[in-house]
Length: 351
Ligand code: SF4
Ligand code: SF4
Image (cartoon, rainbow, N blue to C red; front, side, top):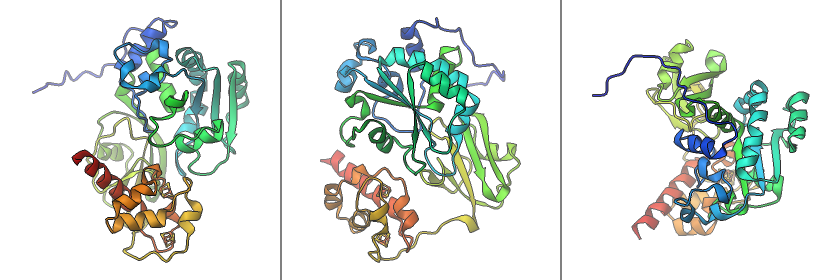
């Protein structure tokens, strides 16, 4: 049995030498900073230029041997209804600016972008600070899902990242979102970053849409009681936001670093998917940002034709949920596609 010392310690440690990127990166690695946007290479390795990669790790990924030419700071929120990154950019602008020289140093990138949504421009002072640091601020269309890396990277750099290519690092590009950059800043200033997370809590029925800072492992139900949100009327929690979240029907789930938002719905607010046949309207094909054929993909997954779905590039689906959102007969498109991906992966493991 592990006994709690029952002390509310401040979670600080000795501050690393500010100029020593090796030491800071060792702390970033030890701090186990994990990101909301999935990447095949962990942050502490992905950020390092080849000469900073410890020899023990280099053979694991040929991508780590590639020089980094472009660094992208992503200030765009991942999905509609979420404003966490906007708030971080606004409230921690000086911390973000302070972190940029470190990120430039560690990556060796010659080109640095700061991406923000059109209509959510950061303050003039921040933009001036970016330009002084040689960073190019880029206003991106306010269209979902431009904040997700598979769309943002081609928009900024013209480089497409195929899903099976080993990620953007393979092409000399590194993306870090502002929330993660803030954790790197904390690490460089003596905090132990993986202990606390900032999440957005949205409960339309209770009129709540706010940011809270919680310790990792805090149960969702404890966050609800701290915000005086009654569990009584809630039927569902979307862990990770309204479009990209995982639907759960219980509240004794711990908050982890990979969760940036929780979206709470009452029974009346839940969108029910239907067991309806596709009416071939084509809306999902028209709106899919990855230029896939969601109608055919979902049908093939539904009927177990996984090889056909694989041949139709199912793994390029970023699970953005737009196809399900526009489908007039409410087909469970993302669920079917995710089911297909899991079946294909399971078959690969068996063979
Ligand atoms: S979830 Fe649907 S719309 Fe989004 S990428 Fe996948 S198939 Fe396309
Ligand atoms: S939007 Fe729905 S009904 Fe229309 S083609 Fe796509 S899956 Fe079929």
